[in-house]
Length: 344
Image (cartoon, rainbow, N blue to C red):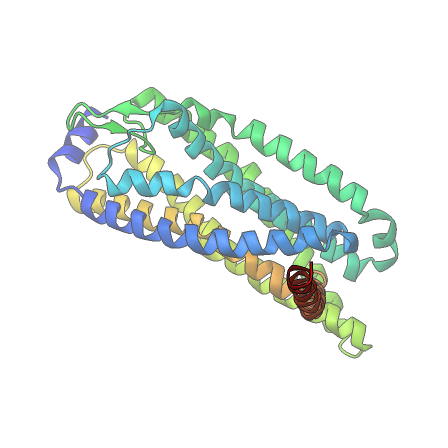
């Protein structure tokens, strides 16, 4: 391991590449994530009377994304300062922790939404009693508790001082052999429980959905709309997994094993470090995929948006119609006041 560390320090640094890519990408994700998820959350809350199990999962997913993107500016600041952390150990731990909580909450809420859609299409009768709003709230609470508790080991890794540059570091993988071994074990647990099992459940659900859709190609307009929503959901969720989640988990596993490998060339080290940067940015970008999930496959989300828009327009029209009346009253009051002054 010492050989590996020495070879890393003797190789050319990718710090400029890393700082530029991270600061730029995280800034873009912050803007799009805050706008997209913030607007979606606002619409979902304002139309909560139309609530359903799917609506509950979308609401929790939006909250999870907003918690994550709210900490990304801290990462942007860190990389703008060329890898110098000045915000203290607590914020370092919280920033790392919220990133992984969002990552796995997104996966689990996508699994719950996929299973809900599976029940609605494959078992429509049982869906009426199983996919209730009350059960969705209970499932959401379990997901939050489970993910927050299982991600707690990430709170163990805070800021540390780099003895070579004398900078205070955060978000950097440890170099000590014992800590790397712990991360490898933690990685395998999160790989199986946090990624593998949910992805397997989603694939089984989508296989069942596709089978039913292919069998019932002709149907009523309502069934065709349900089919369109299901197809959109399959596309968006699979894109999120194939672009954000899968590359990150595969590369993270390879990188942790690579750190235990001795005698690697500088070319391999730089390639592995750059792949960490790219896949971590892709994983963080899952917060931008979720608004697409709400809009294109969310249960009646576009109708909710239309209802919200009509409500806003009606309120605005009501306010506008009351302005001339208020204006007439103010003019009348002014004239009466002038008459009183003229004729005491």
